[in-house]
Image (cartoon, rainbow, N blue to C red):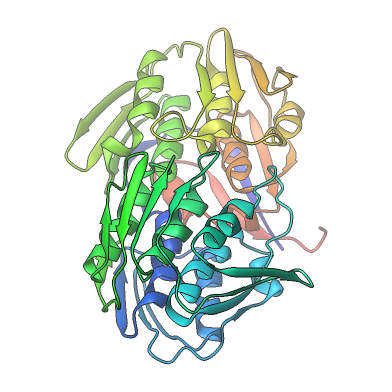
Length: 420
């Protein structure tokens, strides 16, 4: 099992290209199940989660041709409508095959995802919505079994914003009979990206990116070609890396509009940011002012940037306040940061970070994807050597992050370890 060793402190400078968005690539790949043909997706990041979902489609009978960063998927001969626990347990996004399979084939058997390290992510919202569209649903031996001769359009009002639920029902509704309206829909850029791809396939999706999405069902969909949007969380992570190291970094292949709230928060901390076309230049200031953020659904501050901003708070001159309103258990990186000397106090869902104090290298353990990133960032500003264990979490969401950081002047290496 690998670990990552960071020798700090570092100052980052230079250019770095941001990869395609994992959270867009996954639903796009699942959407390919809706059309019996060759779908081509460009700018696909080479990540563990992407490999897992492609393996799942291959098990179902799809022909998958990897030509990174392009993936070609032919779903003409799907002959297995079963998503096994062995794959679904490693990645909750695998539940997104449910809507497309039921829409196109009238049935599916998908494992329940199980627990999640950062808090509950129940799939009941997905299932209740499918039931409203006429699906017959049973839970048998840990699997969701869904049947429907043909889904019917319905008005779906989610009691809380759910990105996965919005995506699943959008895909299911494309082949339903009649019109489906999703109220309180997620508004993320990844939702818009999925809608664009579905419309290229012949779907009729309107309103993606707003709180109300309307899908007019059609009888069939066709193959399509599409390019994944840039990863806004990777963008934000590298922005923080540049800021905390007092660096000067030009991020390429980005969409500044997708990280507006991150930009606003960082500018309020004194970080210099310039945007132009598909680039963002970040220059770290001599003094970083404290940050105050509350994680909320898009377009507000993303929960996936909470851990990284906590490290920004460590460099700030004063006390920063972060409130996590999305997930109830997403501060598991805090004890690891405290091992490095961080002064952080947790009170319920609020963290108070007393910044401006030195941190030192230590052996720390990643607990989830974004926690992994925060520990790497802390290693960049720490004195001495930081060892980050369980970096398989990192591989789920950051393509070649070690190589990218090293190209900017960091001192990071990935090594094998047999002791954990």
